[in-house]
Length: 135
Length: 135
Length: 81
Length: 81
Image (cartoon, rainbow over all chains, first blue to last red; front, side, top):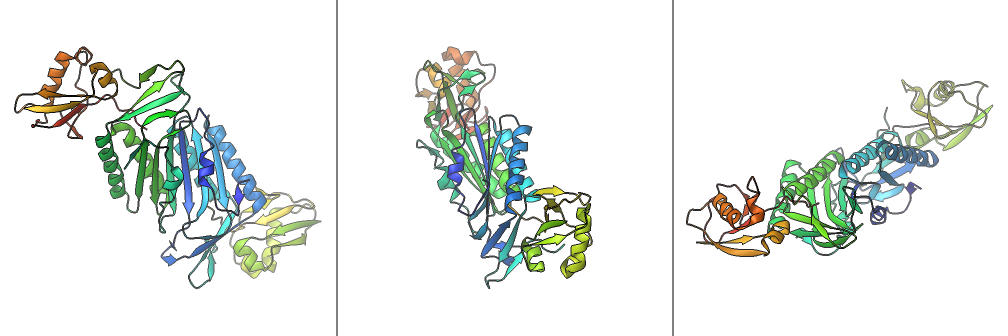
């Protein structure tokens, strides 16, 4: 399971390193208090659940094949998140740091590009706006 | 304090993000079970303590100046570490992920190059060998 | 034949529902389903290009042929992470 | 005048101690201290070049002038991380 409605437990992810792994790179995306100059108090994340799961599995699998010895774990949260909460965590383990950094970076870049998840930024007055909703 | 003899608490480091930070990149170095084909059961890390502290402070400070909005935290453990234990953790927080990844990567690269820390790899028979001790 | 159409995020808000079952001609392609929706939904009629589409939870091209019972979704620009 | 010399890791093993106080001529530079050590310690005598040095916990060049009470260290290749 890549999607979760519960807070992401990054520490639990960190326990995944294996004895041959010398390098762990973790990326955590966190809800910010502003976006494009507009104050934000929360973000609603919504996913096309089944497809998001398979897209994240595809991304993790492709990276493990591209970099020998690399394993990638992804967790993406959905629902309403307050400022400071983690929306996504990517963990890449590898024998050495080059591969760990590269796989972690590639994973988050691909997640943002292809995984069907959307976010609505909530303003202090309670109104919300979908990000990039205008084509 | 950048050096510690206690296990590194990566989860505690992760709580350092501020409300404007949207991106956290963490690198963790972990003791591997082999090095250059030789089996390793532990590593003794030794530091020139006072100088290692000031070098790590210099690295963290320089990166925060180079990338606006970036903060870098570093913890490096010393003493005997078993396979799977974290020897170093670098955390870079930033408004966006480009800076977080770049600062985290630069920090660990600089740490490995300039911080006066040495490691002795311990074999299963209990003997140890300093890494890169031959000039 | 029938396909199930899902709407997410801003598309769901525009259509006013999460999903619907639609009748399409046998042999229809994704593009033809989009054109039918664009004719019905004012918000969609303003789109110059078809948005990304998924058939049975995988990205699909405009030329992908639809089959009875397919789950089809047209996707607003994704914004995960 | 006197300076304090620290040894770490493989250098400490080679010298057999963690530190020592050494007498150097006033105006001595880091390079001269290294040459004196290399004359005393067989392990050091085999080095073709002076290893990286630190004076008072900062990297220093071979030409750095030493002062009474300075803390000097010659550093084996670092291997942190």
